[in-house]
Length: 61
Image (cartoon, rainbow, N blue to C red; front, side, top):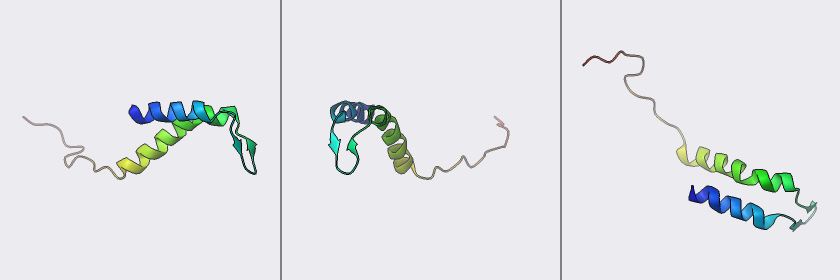
């Protein structure tokens, strides 16, 4: 939540900035930047998740 808020604020701050070789950054890219970066960061931090050991077995109490 804090990371997404930071990226949202950074995207608002970077709108209209001049990028060498590209020119002015497109507004649509800056609006999508927080969502793209959040997905990339979460995919990088989570890595490989291990499934439950008893997956597919019925629960017996």
